[in-house]
Image (tube, rainbow, N blue to C red):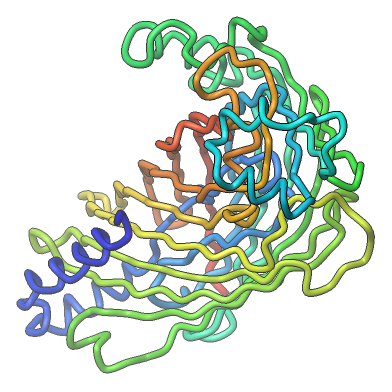
Length: 409
């Protein structure tokens, strides 16, 4: 429903921009020169997702004539109490489980005897994601981008976690929305850090406080075709391909993805630019495997979709300020149908206790508000991301970054 609404808004914007077809060469050049949309990596700092090469969609309309380097840091607060899951393997048990609500299954089976595959998962702390990017323009229509992924885990104390610390989030719950300790952070203990997951084969993923890891690199290629509708209607397309090389012992495999975006641009008040974009892609996991890792996802394909509204304001000194709203969607890490055959056990402290594992069978969604200030050479950006599904993987996420451009000699 959300992405249908975004598509409708895209059509509505196009209908209200008929004057764009008559813009003169000056404004065509202005749109071309302002083609760069600084969209940070708003992918969730998910305990599994950080080890997978996920698609980060591109909303630029053409290549620039400059090399660019960027560095960004994201911080997301994760709160997933211990849950143990039994995936039933006997056909009769599976049929009985399918016909029961999830919260009664624990009392319907003797879990010490029933044939099953067992998973255990818990995660707490602030996951930080670090991205080092280098964009290499080949021609005006072709671009390569190299990205190094790194991650760390810590307790999220001040001053490094102003918004994503346990104290800040619980202050918001107590004083604005949610009530007192709705997710039992104080019950389990605040300012803790640790991730532990055991898959059905007994293989373990583990991160402790202050652990740092480099889980992989991504190589992205983007093609920006020159089309008649670019100058006539200011509608642009781009096509991308991504090779993700995962280097961690938990996911020793390579992923390959493709994506495509459509972007509409409008001139507002003779100098500001409104952009509206839609993008979709699919990532094929494990096209190559070079080790035996943890089963983080049983999906062969991770499909994703993004929508972006960006408003760029031109300042008197020729610098720019941009405001953006981004919606990100990804299908679930595990096959949705499998949840029908799973028995979840854990401490029933609150109404969301089962989310630790059940969210792995649900789609991933997030909304981000983005702010950017750009000069001729530097762009500084920040964003805030919220997961409205309330699965706390992560809850609140923030990010900051800087991009530097260098004109080719």
